Length: 260
Image (cartoon, rainbow, N blue to C red; front, side, top):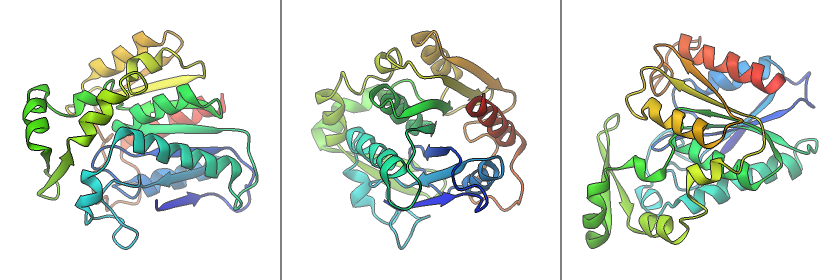
């Protein structure tokens, strides 16, 4: 798992934020580095990492060169990856020990972060951005029967043109660990402060997912960012040196929430 920590050397003992990327994403996608620097400028240490089976490698951190690993991925693996990141932040030898962290999860990483927050009281606050409300929403329901029969499903990556394979073991993990991986059910268990952020123009994960999550946890807060799409205005690569306006607005809302 490749990871990096962004912080101001003058503020080494400030709170830690951990970012969990989404499906077919990686820690250096688009404007993620600018986000990390913005959080560091505003008084946080910011950890972002690549899930162990996201298809990138240490030698090729921004390309999907390990599709075998990608095909072997499961949501249980991703939960253990995120828990390892929390362990590293709280107990790791390279930083002063802390008793807790803040989480930000995007899209699929939002679903993973919801479950981790329900399971781990070291997570003090949660922000989800464009989060899914169920893992089964990542693919059409009608493909599942053929997926089980053939043992593999190919998901198109329109940015790279790749057909990315997913073994049926992903479905089996979802079925065998149905209770643990039920995002809406786990959302009800969250007692920590939680901010749900969604873009009004998200065509990838509909706003209905945010409403489902908010309904599942009455103590959660919900915020809609006008004209924001699934990636809050960012693309990959992101050539500019400033954040897109919707993503900048997201950062300001998340920072205010964490500081409150």
